[in-house]
Length: 413
Image 1 (cartoon, one colour):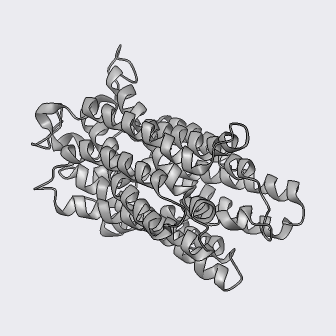
Image 2: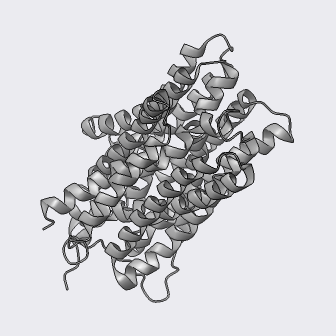
């Protein structure tokens, strides 16, 4: 049985990871403002490319390293990488007068954040599943709800610190929490006690069976949809709706708040609205949100906030549900599923984070049209959900190849 301190540490780490993940997008107006770093849209989007690349690499490498060394070293390395990202972000503000040097530091910082995300998030999801083997879906959904809480807090903190004239107070605060969590976790028996189920691929079986790639494609499309809201919401509000910096930050807060609220709500109404029904309905909500966002006139900023709230509700449970569905259905590679799906999610993240700038600069598209085009991506994700969630399990909420709960029992040595 997992000790309470281990369970608490993993779920608290989810909140801290959420804040760290959105620290950079939350400061988007600082990065692109003339009185800040003065980055162009392309430079701002390009800042997240190292993050996506390193998150993909670390997510894929993490499963193999976990099998050899255990989950605890991977998890601690992820926390350390997040801490390095926050330290570099603070350092960069002292070099704002040198555009090239400051931008280089930001690129290294986002690369460290990608490593932290790629190592930490799959480990946290697998820990949660191992802690509560008979309630895997709810355990993973609860963890991601707390991660979502962290993402919702980041814009609030950045607005507070910006108002005080010290926007860099957010990375200082997050860095302090990361350091405390790193030191506290070193004394936990995260390997010997609640060790996550390691990948066990039978001889002759493909490491990633055909069904995995369907889940992976869904995760990638989801990454595009989430990132269009998570990374560009503030700039969309500021440039399309001519919103103030406070209102632009509020849009990002509302998006991540409804992501969190949606995860909590779905966990609460599981009996009446099973997870597998949610897996089919939520992509349609995401598509509707993009259509609404793209259709609103520039004179309706408050309606824009409501559109981002709708987008957050649609995005809320899709990634954690995809991970838990994949871990149960692909039981023979359950230990590798979380890392693999996080990697493909990050591919979608990279496409949306970097692709918007070139689309504006070279194709002459504004954010309004790009948001409208992303509705097509959401529709494709919705169509794919009918392949992931099989018809005979939509109402029952059961996985077609669900393994017994005992199969998630942590190994003992």
